[in-house]
Image 1 (cartoon, rainbow, N blue to C red):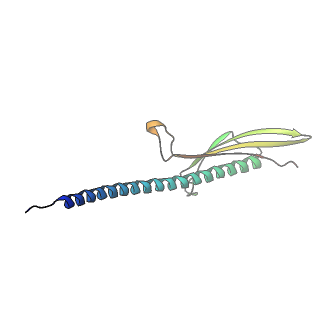
Image 2: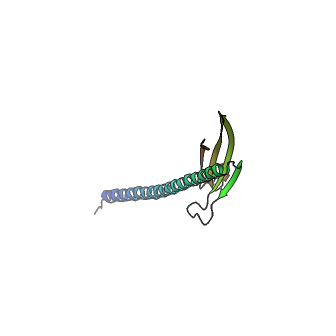
Length: 144
């Protein structure tokens, strides 16, 4: 009475191979889902930072054109009244220059708005949640 174990051993090796391959695929899919979710979150944060920078530019342009002058630099912090932009702060800078054409003086305001959320760090202190957007524009008063 001799028993043959050849086919049974082959089935065991195949089963172990399939289990390992499926475990590796499951781990890869879980990792890929986490990366995709982080990418979506950072994309939304980037869009919010862009809107915060645009709001800062609009605020600076409104103040400069209505007051006829502008602050060299100021910081805008969004509060509870602006819940979509609340965690962002905007550093707004303004450079004013005047030019005379014939008898008309035209004031130009070069505005730069940098919206940030979080603290930037490098190396070990790097912050993966940091987001920043910078916009620049020039506005002028309309000559009469």
